[in-house]
Image (cartoon, rainbow, N blue to C red):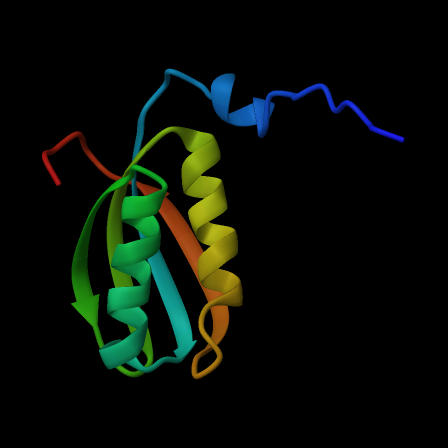
Length: 102
């Protein structure tokens, strides 16, 4: 017996994402390993198509300037909260920043 599968559009929410663009400062606090977490953050921000710049990185705080669609910034926050295995994220605070190139 042969089954025919009709392809569906994957991830329809990506197609309907907002055209509105936010610029935010994301402050991540916890027990962080900047040597591994910063490249992880940059890689995932790039995968989501977000403009990003690390403003500060230490073992207890990373500050990330990020710009893009609100839905994608939400996804980035969720990803950072889960993070790589060697970090423990306690809080993530987000605040709007003035328009600037990042």
